[in-house]
Image 1 (cartoon, rainbow, N blue to C red):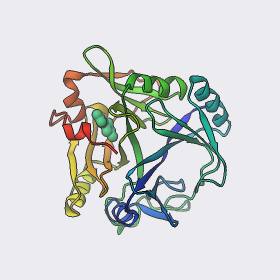
Image 2 (cartoon, helix red, strand yellow):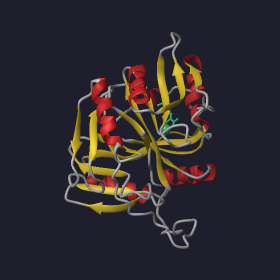
Image 3 (cartoon, protein in one colour):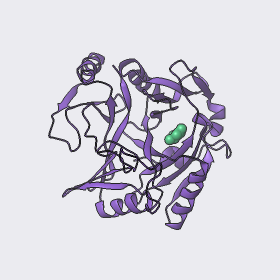
Image 4 (tube, rainbow, N blue to C red):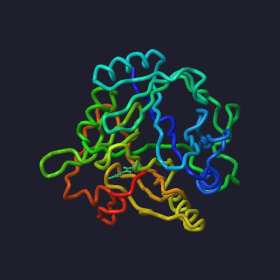
Length: 304
Ligand code: M3P
Ligand code: FE
């Protein structure tokens, strides 16, 4: 049993048309479906129905985030484990959500709504399965990342939240930041992927979303993404630069409603027995932004 990876993020936007224009034309995602009050989007190399759902709501925010589990029976196992930990769970029935079957929902200790699902509608990537070309059509607009990579949520009590994700949900810790008293200020957690993180938790207000990130294949694509962002007048938060934590190359920027996005590449290969890396608070500047060595207040204080 186990948690495989991030499947989709569900957010609210007060301007569905503006958000859709940004995510299709600047980020370069594929619009999969539009209903009266929601838009479903995915990246060109994603097989699942969608990786981003945006629905109209007067206030920007995150509704929930969804991870995919390995086997159908895992939902019942996780239901027992999460309930035993003391978090109430509920089931969303098949037919209630677009692009997926039954799922399990609960609030994680830091207050975000998390969903686990196994039954996801596989609609395939843009390349097809017979003699696929290795690249998408060259005329895709915007940044056009191949896939969503990871997300970061905030928690007032990082250690408590990390314990839940590790002990109850079975994610593996790859890196952590400790304050002078040895308390966790941030943790990076991997599911069944070999990436340094599928989700990270950093100190901040409960319930908040800090960002989600799209994968790009190399540093040159990060540079091109910076050109695309600047050309389109997108507000860049930090970068292009490199994280010390994860070693990844990165840019942070804001969508038109103020949700932070990241593009990310690099990082190292993680095996299940890889030893945990630890950063100390006095080196957190380099951990965050290795070249700049800053802990920017905007970066720490702005959330969705
Ligand atoms: C990342 C990453 C914070 C650190 C963020 C790091 C919010 O986003 O991809 O490793 O302190
Ligand atoms: Fe990130």
